[in-house]
Image (tube, rainbow, N blue to C red):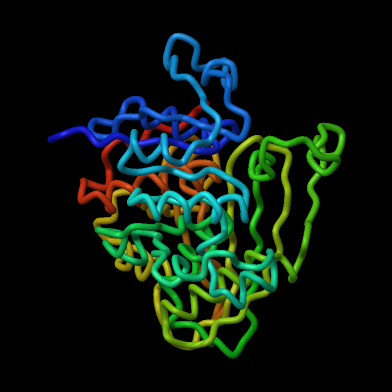
Length: 337
């Protein structure tokens, strides 16, 4: 099959690094363009671990140059910057997989938590895709809104039970994330002395990802879903564990139901005991488990926040977008021990 030239804008950060690591060995995608806001550097200077592996230059963002070089661009940029860049690329006929939040929400929900939306035309056709929940909806898309880490883990734990739980009773989600989820830019919240030997909850209840969970859970079951979302920062580099607590309205075997729901999904593993984040580190796997205590449901999902929660899920979506096998180029071997 003919190679497909692709690029990354926002290659400096952790998700950009993960995209580079996968794309340089992808059998169809050919990484030819890397850019950030400054340019005048190389992938190796930004990510010294790739010395001898990837010698690409990193240019200052130039949408005309990107359009001349690529059929598809991955955007690993902050919100607002991403939509400004996506709009220009789409106008030039380039397909886009956006890792930011800019196209994940309705305009009303987005503007309540982020900023004024500057690309409503493209928002109207952006495809939000967790492949196990949305199927091949990304096939042939021009713009994919790649879901984030907290939302991916939470929805994957919750989705099998949306028709089996009492939506009028509280749904609680406790989601713990590694520090890389805060990004590469330094801040006091992720300083070593703040994170080491410490666990802290942040933005409880009012976290902007709660709205994303509610919007897309509601769409999955065609009913209103409200959640109480509590994220926690834990002292590890990468990994995420989302635990969902809800009230069952019907008798079921949660683990069997979860297994049936995700049958034949190549990146889902149903565990017979609670999963560990280390089991998924460096992979696109979502490891799931569920149990009950009377009518109280406990469902959980472990993922790598940088991979399934961002870059590897973006690559799976890109594979589907371009009518390729979704597993192409996707890591399956965890970083253990």
